[in-house]
Length: 422
Image (cartoon, rainbow, N blue to C red):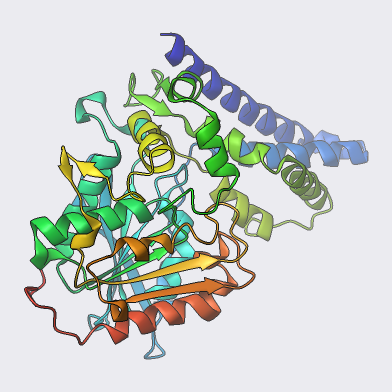
């Protein structure tokens, strides 16, 4: 009950701040307030508007907002987001482009389960669907999943990816962004041994911690400093009575958000202060850069506690993937079994989360893969976000990834079926 009370207390604080913002905005907007031409009233309305919007976004799942796309034929096509595989902890989505022939490139974009929704990859999806068939893993908020659905740890995550790859078939090109990179590599190795015909054609790992110890960062140092008991005691709580997942142990999204923001508190404080002043001067808009960024950044989701704890222990502390010692249901997953899937790694030179060296370590683990099927790229001047959604992605990395996919599209693979599983 103590952990549930703490969870509900955080939600109460969030809800109270949202109410205070709404009250301040409403009070300052009453007509009679116009009789008092005081700048403080405009400031109060601006503070209320920014505060209400910010705390409201923390419990709202953002929309993909991709209604149409201009394709290579120069026409605008409607985009329908369809669920093709539905599971308790995550779905497989397909971005169907109406009125367009199916594209030869089939891409499975593996989104992180690291506190934000898959919509964080919105710009990545938009850049790919113009000439690709794009599928995305859409992980669910743990607070909305009943306890009866069971647990979800790194092994379950890996098996979800295995099922998604099996569903899409051997012509799939998998692109894993950040946190899921080591587990996507493990899922591919699992298929290589258990179901070779279902292996993807290519695997691109972007900014992922394959070997966290290769280049230490603040993230990896934190993982080594704290014990698992400390993490479980301080970071994990049980969902309160407001949500369907009542009683489920989670790493709460609001707690994650406080950690995110504390890392750059000065920058965030200045951003919100500047936004309040812009609103007061009438210079802000619903879709200005501040709102576009923070509407996504503040939208956080609860992570299953067992997934969070097993990720820290097995991926960061014990480095099971880096040591090729990862197991699923007690069975060793040998990364050396990957012999036909072309693998490319992408890193950012200025990435302070998954520093250069952590992701490219995957290539050394692929002892059974010919060198001609291995590739790597280090993007100069790019940070973590830029390698999958920024200017570096649009101008340099995306063309390289698509060229890598095309180079391996026509190669016949022994033992791989050419049919697509639907």
